[in-house]
Every structure is written in structure tokens, then in C-alpha cells.
Length: 115
Length: 110
Image 1 (cartoon, chains in turn blue, yellow):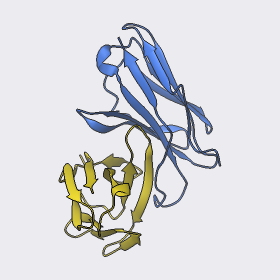
Image 2 (cartoon, chains in turn brown, purple):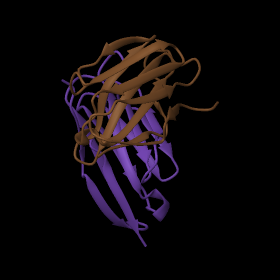
Image 3 (cartoon, helix red, strand yellow):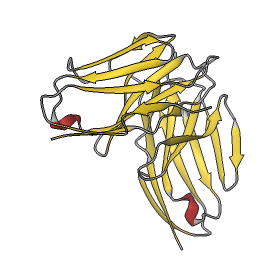
């Protein structure tokens, strides 16, 4: 079991550029979550998918953020255009099917710096 | 909207001492999770609590859940330096809507 795989691990970009973060959930997991972590705001749920369908995207900060899950093994979080306030660690997590009993399995995160 | 509150947010304790971290949440739920995060690392699952009165123990950590009070506790017994980390509780508000507390940064001093 390779765990949840995120790429890149680090991303440094200039304000105004497009940023795409990628996530491969654990095989067989049917729920996928995107979180953002900052010192000021802690862990914020941005969006989550069940069976590749976005369920709740109310945490997405604004229209500059978008997320997709084209299949069960891949998801992207895109920021366009990026701003310095988007600098944070972005975590992807997945969980197994069931009655919600499974904990989240987190990837190692992508540390995004927007200058 | 589901809100999850932890306290304390910062905890400095000496080795060998006991302490409790509290997690309160605002809406009905019977699924609560505890996670640990080391500096610069990801989060790892510690406990899954799925019913009122559930108690789980692993080493020096014990977690419990009171769904009627909407309260979970994480008790640390005879703390050791290796327990220094940030501890998060998370509550499933329904349909996998998983919300996290702000975290408790624990520092165990010799």
C-alpha cells in the first residue's frame, strides 16, 4: 500500500501563475478530501468527493480555486490565478468505503509558496 | 455548520505528568477521530471513536467519547518526550463532512 500520493511536494510560483496540485488516493478508497493548512486558519476542508462526485465545495475560498476528480485514482486542485495569500500546505486525504468508520489517510502534502 | 473546538491549544508539560485534551463539537455526531501531526509532517490516525461511551487506548494515550455531551477527551498518562506533537480531533458531521479542531500543540519537557 503506497498510501496517498501527492505531487509536487513543494511548489514555488509567482503571483498570477496557475498552480495545479495532484493527488492519487489509496486504491479502493471512495472518498477524497482536499484540506489547506495554515498557521492562522488551521486545517480547512476545501472540498470532498464521494465516488468521484463533488459533495461539498463550500470551503473553496473563491472562484480561483477548482477541483476535479476525473476517475477513482486521480484528483487535481487548481488555483488560477494564484495569490500570495494562497501560500499554505495543501493536503489530500482519502478514506475507505463503509459507514464512515474509516479514518482519513493523508498524503504528505504540497507546500505552496506564492511570491 | 459543524464547529469543533479543542482546548487547550498549547500544552507544555513535564515528563511523567498526566493531562487531558478536550474536544467539543456543535452538532450531533457519533463519529470522532484523533490524529497526530509531527512538525513538517502529515497527519496520522490515532483513534476512531464510533459510539457513545467508546474508549480506546494505545500506550500512554486514551481517548473517549460522550456523544450526549458532544465531548471527546484525549488523556495522556505519564508523558514522555516522544509524545510531543500536535493533536487534532475531527468530527464527521454526516456524509463524510470531516471537520477538524484547531489542534493542541503538546510539548513534553524533560
